[in-house]
Figure 1 (cartoon, rainbow, N blue to C red):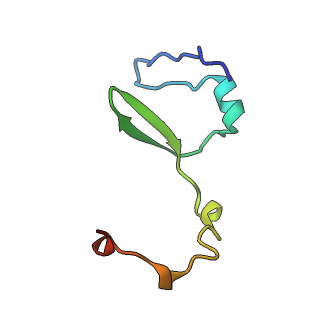
Figure 2 (cartoon, rainbow, N blue to C red):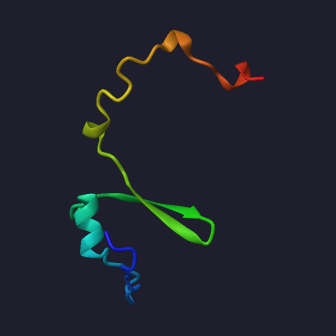
Length: 72
């Protein structure tokens, strides 16, 4: 992935993500993204689909859960 890839904001406030970045990240048309403000910039993160989250907490032990009030 090249670090010099740039995009221009169109008059319709749209930006096309450079092909090298789309390919490297395996992003597809129709994928949903979140924009997260980060200092003077913006972090672009793909929003995972529900199917991608299935089984993520497998093996977690709820009896060992620590709440914020438990912290010193």
